[in-house]
Length: 133
Length: 371
Image (tube, rainbow over all chains, first blue to last red; front, side):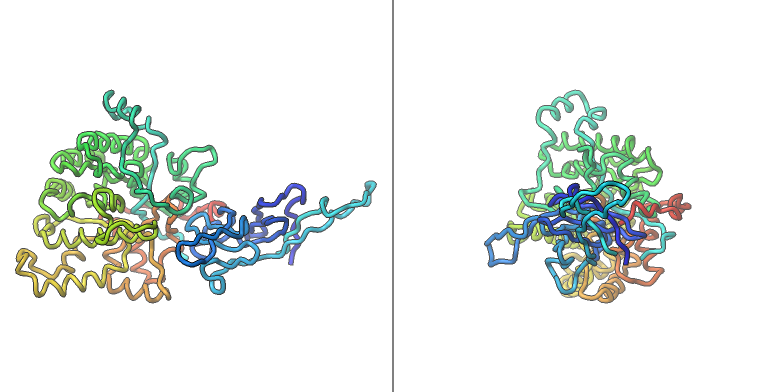
């Protein structure tokens, strides 16, 4: 398993995404309300670049003619056919058990100090977003 | 995954006008002024939502604020150069509603302008592109003249009409159009659209949601097919070929069974229908694949393909750049290799008379352009 620096935390605000290439794999990394997640950038339906889709909420299943908007900015909607996936789990909205996209671990770690230069106390705000593939 | 060396003939690609002014060079001064003042005035989408981003692939909208598929360069970058497209048939976009316009002469002027714009700005710019001529089918005799005129360009390989017309296409009023198509060897293509513009979209009225109105497409196609058979269209025009675009495919087989069953007891109403309806349809009609239905299991689709004679009746289409675009690599179910070649290219090659050629980009599909 490799460790790939995606970005500095301060450059990766909530609601944003980065699409990175790890070997032959395209992966989308997302900041959802301050939590980081990563998904394979390939829709299981027809292979579209899923992570370039809309980051949005969804309308949850309700009784007829009730509209309940929820999970604001927690889902990704495929740029081709509109299949919706939960970014945190990679599970599709319409069939969460059978239709899923691969997820990867993302951590936020303090930037390692370079011993050749003077160091200062670090906080997580100075951290790096790390993708583990 | 498709062998990348397989050529693909894409039977449904849409190209946009970059703006309304693009049509001006092909219109009279009077029509230009009308357009500038009142716009196209084409009947709209009926108030329904759509999919994707304003109906198109989210990634098809250019970052510079332009319109999807509005330059040959955009079409190449996102579609023609990504897949091994040997030929693509352009079916327009903005002006598809021409046959729905109340003013037949305005409609005819727009059709002529579109056809000339398509030739100059698309067919002449990339030798993979072919096009279907728009016509104002409100006045069939006038439309036939436009077919003759537009077909003078060798890149015009078909004529395209719309699903939601005033009366179904088998009726005699359309004969001049089909005579021109047959005489010139041009297939007549019907693209979905206009369902509900000139009447209610389904036999039971107006549905509420976009997903429902999409199901009116095959209702219209079923009505056109029955009309064509029982009005004797294919006995009057024995070499005519008709292509049904974007209206589904898997409904075809049970529909043929139903037509044939009913005909056995009702044939005396239309005695010119000498053979079972399915025979005319299988001989004269083809269907495009997109949006390809998904079955519970892919092999169930294989069975339907076999029953429907997919090696003769089904042609691949992507519908680029619409949101329900089908990839030539991932949208078709498993099928025998000879059938796959027929569906991806060979049936369309015969129908549109497209000479085979070596693909410049078949062995060099850029990986970066893929998902």
